[in-house]
Length: 98
Image 1 (spheres, rainbow, N blue to C red):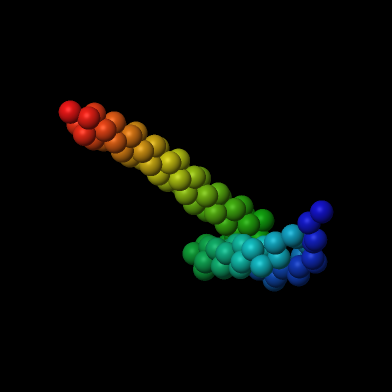
Image 2: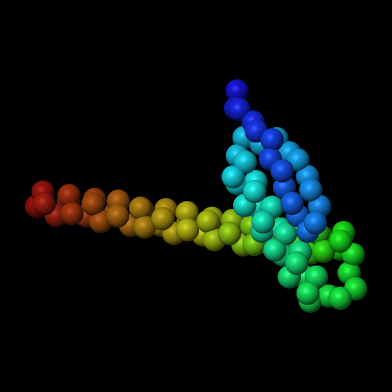
């Protein structure tokens, strides 16, 4: 069983305590959300904390989706390159036999 530790998060003036098996990662993510909320608060003068949180969450989710698309594309490219290498290996093997 993973050992979980209590982590105190401060996001946009709100404190939240959570238990996590990856406390450093959770703290890093909280800093990202806090930063985004503060950036949006500077852009939009009259916006609620809830709206700031939603904007920050959407921003991070958009980046995660883009990263996932890039990861899938890289996997596809690697697969194509592996197929090409296999074909070259077959070609070289057939040439060395002649």
